[in-house]
Amino acid sequence: MTSAGELRRRSLDSLTRPSYSIASGDMALLNDNANLYGVNPAAVDVARSFDFARLWAYPSESSEGLRARIASELSVSPDEVIVGNGSDELLDIISKCFIDPGDLFASPSPTFGMYKFYARVNHAEVREHLLRPDFSLDATPLLEDGAKLMAVCQPNNPTANLFERSELMRLIRRPGGMTILDEAYSDFSGSDMLKDAMSSESCIDTRTFSKAYGIAGLRVGFAVSRKDVIGELRRVRTPFGLNSFSEAVAISALDNKGWMRDSVSRMRSDRDYLSSRMRALGFDVKPSVCNFVIGRSPVDGPGLVAALRSKGVAVRDCSTFPMLEGFIRVTVGPRPLLDRFLEAAEGIIGGGRA
Image (cartoon, rainbow, N blue to C red; front, side):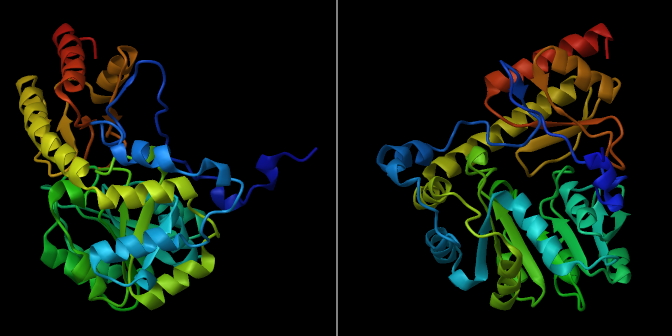
């Protein structure tokens, strides 16, 4: 009998899918950069009036209502917006649309690992270029590649910093290739490069409701670009990509942004608290404009991550990224949750058990 592994595309043999933690029991999930200040009340508000009896029907084919609301929010046309089942689906769609087998995909490194995952699934050759030692971006080697598709995150995950606009503009306006500008964390940083992205004929600005808007469980993402670019993406997306409840909640979240703004404000204060406390424990903490903090551990990083997990606290081991050996990444949340991490880390570090 022939196994699925034998039938699998041979191009996937060396492909490793990034792993994600699953919520279980009382595990404190400080590792996936979701909004830890609670679910957006828009979800509860919509649930009270949502017509669940109509879930037998398909949702809107292209999420016209949400696209119109996003377009209004960002002062663009609905024809310049596409939505998806999280921004991850959009990254996959973009790769499917613009990569032929053997085309070159390029990105800075370290950065969000799913860029190269989707590029490789879609038969691209992947090339990565290290950031400078201070985590700043040098656009020159990326431009020299002449890649068919490129991705850059602003601000960057996992390094938590903003890149210089001048370097990003060189990538956004490059000829001969498409550039993804991922602004998933822009709501935390205050950065907004949508106008810059729209000034280019070959840039796609991707965003998400999974971070600041606090509805990661509903999987809503969107991308904005020129009408002709969005038209090409719609050629390869699946119909009915977003369910009707998720669409309604996302619209409500945009209509009532007070909760999002308040949680971002709380996060910034708690980020300062977390950074200070981690430094006191001996971590080399880097400046952050995101809802997470990275720091080099004073003890073995992977060992610390494993020991914390045994105590019910999940943080991200960054040692798998270039330049980040010994670093961990901690999502910012309410102080009782941060204190749980800090107390566990202090016990492990003080006890020399990592």
